Image (cartoon, rainbow, N blue to C red; front, side):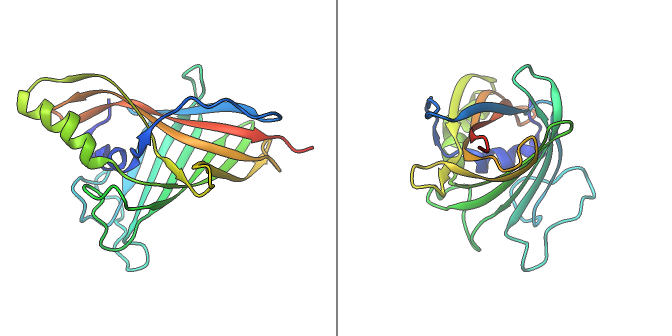
Length: 213
């Protein structure tokens, strides 16, 4: 379950239907995950958005050069659902953008995945929002019926900056030093609790890596 202060990040994340993509020759694939029920640690923005920040009292991004941004810190899991590290997201969007209703807005997002004992990865992507579709298809209907939504809606957030619509694996350290490649962020929504405004699901970082030669 994903509690109300975090809903903003989920609304901004969703971007398009996810597709199963095979690795190209020479690529190594690996996925990491965020459990939306348990893993988020902190979220902040400029304070003017439709949902709150967390934890209470966290510093807001009110200064002119950072007010069009979102910062998120969360735990990170492996494919066996074990917590194995941390992930942070720094995101910026155009001034005056309507992130709830304008699906054409492009956001710049940088993710850092830190995995103690292995190393770290730095990822860059561009993404758009289908927050309005999420609100109308799932959240609003569930509120109006006062019934929880259960199902599966899989969307991918990543639309660039690569020409093929993938994000870029910019760099890494430790085990991931000199690794290059591409990635997608894929969000799977599986439930919504209208009384508590809780979204249920997980985020997947699907990496396609070229090890150094």
